[in-house]
Amino acid sequence: MTISKIGVLFLHGYTGGRFELEPTFQYLKKRYDFEYEFPQYPGHGTTLDLSGVTGYDWYEEAEKAYFNLAARTDKIYVIGFSMGGVFASFIAQNFHVDKLVLIAPAFDHTKLSRLNRIKLSPAEVNDHLKLNLMSRVRPRLKNIPIRAMQEFIKIVDAKIGDLESIHCDTLLIHGKIDLLVPYQTSIEAQKRIPHSKLVLMEHTPHLIMFTEDKLLELNILTERFLFLDSQLKHLVD
Image (tube, rainbow, N blue to C red; front, side):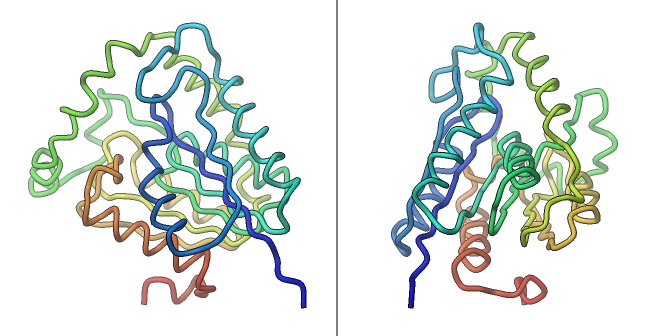
């Protein structure tokens, strides 16, 4: 019997880096043997330098990593966070992917002027404030030029594509107190992706990797879906 060689592609988000998915990578790698690609887009990482790069540079890095992985594996799983979720879904629309995990995929984003549409309760607002995520984000803001935001919007619009053409099993995971990408975006995406399951996580922000208990929940969900052959309908039983 031939044993399939599994490859996992990890795709981080806009203005982030490998650190966003590193905890999930480490969790899975300690438990399973798989090949992987874990690209970091030009200008991204712990230190940002986005002045001379484009959204197409970012996507091309993701696609190049996919082909590098496909050349040495039989099965490919793709995990994408935020903008990386958009890239992951576009790759799945156009190339062979066996399983797809989309974590808060940025098919839409929230302008500050439209935060009211998220309709957080006072308790959920308090949950978000207690996480103090702005202390992690604020030091990076000075290194994000307006042009980089324009590139983000442009590349997301270009790579959303046709979600109905994703034919692999897909797991969407989204936090219900996400202020950057409203979880309603994933509800709509789940309706369009044929073989998909959506898990909405209570008390969970966009930057799940900075919340210890929710990060563990995310990792377990991802593990069950990718490696334990859990049926989509039974994933959260």
